[in-house]
Length: 477
Image (cartoon, rainbow, N blue to C red; front, side):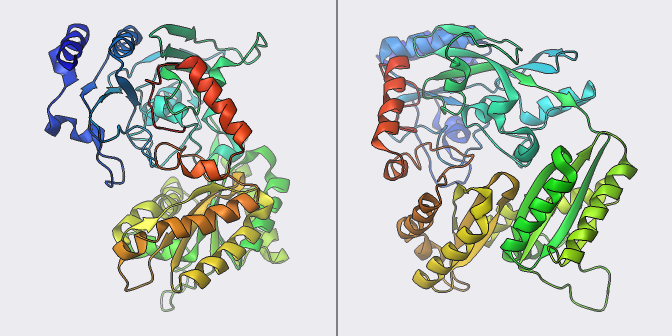
């Protein structure tokens, strides 16, 4: 059966785009964190939605699972096949065209394999902004962003990927092509099918193209870095920034001191923002920091004046201990690198236990206080790397081994650590997956926190749209 299937795949795609050699499949089967290697019957690289549809119909006929894949940058094993070797990975990386830009309608239509950075650049050429911004934007794809409802740094102002999408083209589990590529902001004609596929991680169908929202490019983007005495102070500063800056506040990132010190240790070319004013003294450390960005449509000088006034008032009110404001693009990039390099610094330090969680913004300080205390009581000396998009309630709350101890041995306690963190998230009415999805990694964990009714409704949708269970089986449910 497999010989016939592979032969038919070659008829559809050509020999060069049906990969069966294990050595050539490796980049498609190894997860981003280099901890799990799946197996596949073949890796298939279609060039069009018609080819995707033909492949899905073929998989349906032969009852072979389809695993859609974009940039393979996910962290929950959502785009990796299991180890049975019976699935076909359908990589959309060859489907990477920008199909249309409608400047007057502020939309861009792209194929799912377009890199996020490619979409940003295409929008910029038309003096428009596509605001989704992720650390992996040079390697992640729009299809993957949509399938996981990716968040990133600008959710506070622009929303998740779901809010940035107006229409989709999707290949269904039956191999039909649904053309929903409509650039409408108002369309109340029944069930919103688009939203079913966004965030579904390829379990209901394969997104092959999308119509995305664009925005006018701001005339200025100003970045500041504030030192804070506590997580409570971070919440106070956030409220102050929201009150004074309103919708011009585009990012508010929380960074713990331990997170910052990891970055400075492993990336010595980067500097502590508070270490340059007194060359003979050591930079002062603070428990937390906030990276604040505002976008202004008036002028750069207007933006700088606004943010400096806010920070000065915050220091006077005791909501910030110190602050610096970038006065050039290069300084702004340097401040952002302190935030963007945290994950890589953690990887260089050793293995750690990651949590991608969301909490109501107002409850973040209490969550941190309580969960920090529970973890350190249960696992003395454990090191907590807490950072993330505080403006929208999304924390990356990661736990590392005590200094000098084995990270391999520490990882063996992951289930117990997860239980403490995720139970607290549940107590605070949060989510154990804010922006990375469930994939295979959190598929079983979510059963502890979603109600039986929620899971039943999700299974009903899956059964209705994919009765053969060939679309990315074993993920989400």
